[in-house]
Length: 277
Image 1 (spheres, rainbow, N blue to C red):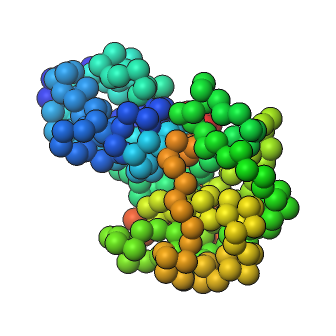
Image 2: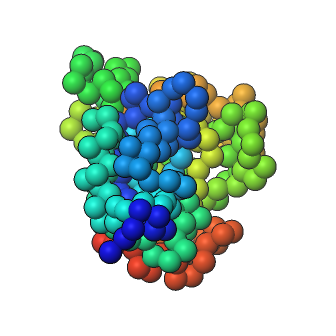
């Protein structure tokens, strides 16, 4: 049983259509995921609320597998949060499930990999029902070239060409664990997993890969970009609506060092929904 001032720590599985949101981080005067969640907690008379998430998605980016840990004071127990919070959120943002978080759990520091999908509609006609979730690309693409460039991106590289030049990042090496294009009906979908991502990294990779597929960039040039080239060498950033966070892992990945603040055992007590996304 909890009291109004009880300290609580919950883990939430969150899904959202990122179209109306200006990214995760709270900002004044615009809707953000963190801002809307904090406002919902406030309506529940929760105080001292601190939120962390596994992936800080950009404006317009979606998620089916965002994991959030929430520390707060209030009378609502963590297992009841999903229903209570969702009743105070816009329809594009839903708390699917909630539970008590393991002791010390940190959704950002304990995540060992994140996976995204980027959807590209390749037919000649656009799709009004999918416009919020795909990039329409009616021009022909060399499927073999796309497979080659995805394979080239796999592994550890210095991704300075694939993030804005003006950035708070000081370390640009990331390890891509999986990168492949699959055919899904009339869409091409990039599936990409890495230990971590730089800001706009997936979207710049997609924009540049599509340039390779159109014959505007060679595989040799793409390899050079992966060696630490400046942002000016890569191609246009793909728009956000095709991108979706689809999976998070918590256990160490073979051949990849754990994040600096990762601690063994902190994610061991996560509920099943955090592992079955």
